[in-house]
Length: 116
Length: 111
Image (cartoon, rainbow over all chains, first blue to last red; front, side, top):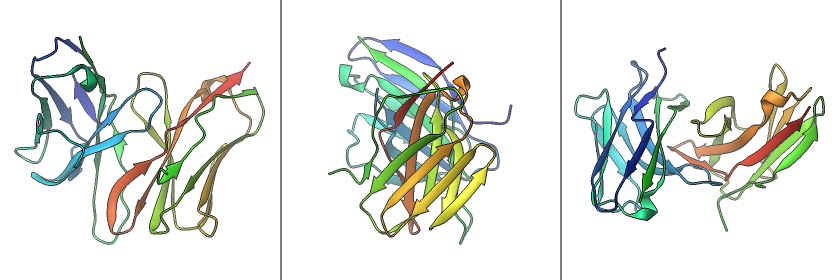
């Protein structure tokens, strides 16, 4: 399967703990996006990378959230000092951005986080 | 007011019916329009992708974009129980590929 993969699929943690999620994009894709989705809502943009550069970060994103894409391939999203309000599905998407062309984002299965 | 409005439903129709799903938006800069399908506890799956105005057909699915009315639609013909899912519209401006999403419409196809 050459789609977007995410690990873990589910994570239960206690409030105050740190968690890290991993996303492996489609191999030739140069853009990688992180979204958060809560029940009954569309995905909410968190941040995105073009290759290894983090180009945009949502103003809604707390300083407790950090993302990396060190070699322009896989990415990690870390949440420090988790809060119950962080409970959500965290989605990763990747796309191939070409100059002058539209792009299509392909999503992974998501990591469902529950903070107790 | 949200940039993209979408009726959350649920929309319940009998198997075989034609389904119409819609989104309205306020930003005239949007040029790229997408429909995603999301099954429970799964990531969104791209169904249709259109640029600017017009229609696009793919099998049982037809996407329509009316930029003058800031209104997009997804039609599903010969609906099947397997089409039961949440359908999300998403759109972006040509200069910024950050997607703006509707909240999703939950569709239920009754056998």
